[in-house]
Structures are given as C-alpha cells and as structure tokens.
Length: 521
Picture (tube, rainbow, N blue to C red):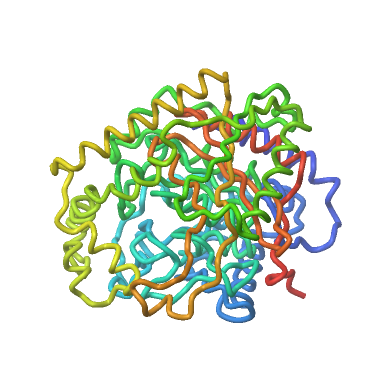
C-alpha cells in the first residue's frame, strides 16, 4: 500500500489537534480531506455528524432550493458506515488515507448494495451485486459511498429518463456539462467531500470546468474500469472531481494501479509513484515550460461572439498568472492537424455496441442484454437515443475503423513532437472556449434540440491521444460563470500535471463556491 502521504497526514493531524481544539462546530462548506481528518482528531466532529451535514445539504438543495437534481440514490447505510468508522477511529485511528471521506459516485459505476441505473429508467432498481474495483479501493482506504449521482443517460449529455435534467450549480438555468454533471454539481454544491466521474470524451473535465472544480482524466491504463458501463474502451477512464488539487491527488493515490480484472492496467506497472501528493509544491511552476494552444478545437466555436471573448479574457489572465508564477510560456504553439481531433473522436462509433453487449452479458439480472434492446425499449430519452442509433451495427472489425486508429496515432505523434521541439512539460488551453449554455425548453423531448450543449469543446485531445489532462478553476466570466484551464501532458505524467495545477491553484485561489448552495444555518 502506498502510504507515505497518509502517514504524513497522520502526523499533521496530531499536530493540528491541539491548535483547533475548542473551535466552533465544524462546517463542511469547502472542507478538504485534511480539514476533516484534523477535525476528527480534535474531536470537533464525528464521522456520523459529518455525513449528516452532507445529507442535510442534499435535502436542502438537490430537490429543493435550486433543485440541482445531482443525486440519484442516497446510500441508506451511510450513517451506519460512518458510525463504524467512528468506532475504529476511537480504538486505533484512521482506517486509511480516505478515512471518513464521503464520496459522490457517478451512477455508471457498480456498487453491490445500491442500484446502478446509468441514468436510465430502464435500469431502475437494478443492483449488480458486485463492487467496481475503484469502489473496493475507496472503501479499503476508509472512504464511504455517500450517494450515486445523476449522469447523462448511458454516459452522454446531462439528461436521462431516470431523472430529467441535471442543473448547473452556478446558474440552474444552464447545463452542467456531461456526462458526469451530477457528480460535479454535487461536489460544487458541497453535497459530498469528493467525487468520482468517468471520462470517455470529456465527461470529467467538462463538468469540473463549468463548476469551478478540479477534474483529472488519467492516462487510460492508470485506473481500472472494472465494474463500469463502457462507452468507448479505447478512451474510457475514471478519475476524481474535487474542489482542490490536493484532494484529487489523494484520490488518485488510492485509485491508480494494476487490476487483473482490467488487463490494460498492466501498462501502469512501474509508472505509479509512491504518492501523487508528496510532489505538490506551491512553487512548482518555477521554470516549468508550458505551451499554449489558442486555436479552437471545436468546429462551431465563434471567436467573434461575446461569450467567447469573456472566456478568452479569463484564459489570458490565467496565462499571465502562469508567467507570474515563474513558468516559461510558449504562446502560441501550433499543433498540426488540430482540426482532425474532433473528427477522430466523433467518427469513432465502432467500439460501443460490442463493449456494451459484453458488459451486459456479465449480469444475469440486467433488464436488457444488448444495446439494441436498450434502444427498442422506447425508454431512453430522445436526445440520447438519437446518438446511440449511430453506433448500432458497427464493430471494430469494420474497415472504416482503421482510419480512426491511424488518425489517433498521427495526432498522438504530433502532440509529442511539438512538446519535444519546444521542450514542454505540458500544453494548456481552455476546456471550453464558450460559456455553458442555457438548457433548452425541449431538451427532454426533442432528439435534435437546439441546446448548444458542448459549444467550444476542447476536451477531445486527451481521449484521442490517451494522454492525461487536468482542468483547474481559472476564474469567472463577467457573467459569473466558471472557466476551466486545462493542462495536458505525456502518458503517465499525472505527477507533473498535478504539480503544475497545484502551483497555479495556490498562486491564484480562483475557486469560489456557488451562491445557490450557501452554508446551512
């Protein structure tokens, strides 16, 4: 077990205990893992009381108040699990590095004693009877699954037949990005301490960016996908959505590593450090070489629009902040064939049906057995069904799949070449070139809604290459909407990305909680 940072935390907790004793009752708003462990050590709070505070916030703000609609299932055993953790803590201290960390888990990931719906009413009440590998690892480290979060139906968008539409915590009239929108809205609104999302084409980083959060898409082989509904296996991955870079690193310490149930993780052997937390340094931008991609990667981006200019102003300030913190900024860098990135992702419809059918075959109790069954059920939201139709009948044996693989390899080589020529540690760009858009009135009923969802999307470079990417809060537009700054690195350079993100975070402190979910009385 990689415990170096956990052991260090134990020492820090003990040192902090005397200084915080007698302080006012612990408040969960914007709390971090270290904050919670210090509060537990000082007797300021119990795990049960912590969990209850999060449950109270969900009750106040998820279906009431701003009605974010982020939560699908609350773990009915959460308080009991918290009490068990309190008993262990009283007897012997922290169970592990994530002791009493209430996790918001995307409902794409299996839990043996809670329903897993994939955002669809078709799977209402479906319990797989097994835990995904990451769930086992989280629980072994002392975390508890507080709730399963709403997700775009079958991992796309932000609407689903199981729940309707998730809403953005900063402006509930706008979309939360997807498909991990429920996790991001919940973490932004402080419904849980940390969250887990899934990213096939941007579903961790998009929701994180529009919620002033940290979102890490790991190198594809780094984190096991066992127990997760697949989308495109060549680009699927799981990762943290948190309010701070440190908490993202703490989660990755637990999640990363080989799992025989997902053989692709064998590529990670020898590439996982003892701790992703240990290397975090507020001065890590000093001397770092960072290249700026300014060219839009989304064919529908409009550089002349007002909201594009608002986002650009925030990103320009972020780039200036990188320089001010000591980074050597190469601005701009030109990536050959950048317009091919979106096409290489969107045209890859060849992996999904095979992967979904193989996954469903693992579950005798599943209500359907194939992707075609899902579509003919008539349950899936029209918007999502129209996208799923495009993947039916296609396989990785089709000759049209080869140009997709060739394009991905060409883009991968282009990125590495540009980084080598400029001696870069990372590339940076806006996660989105536009603000998140207003939810269309017909988003739940129209298969071809004029929603504007995903406008200005720059998230595809990471999945097409398989390289890791980290989005961090860059600030807010004049309209008060969050903007994400995304760092992309070479394979298995999560340590570097987290260091750079931490240096930027500590030097700017751009994260602000949404006004829609204030502290409870």
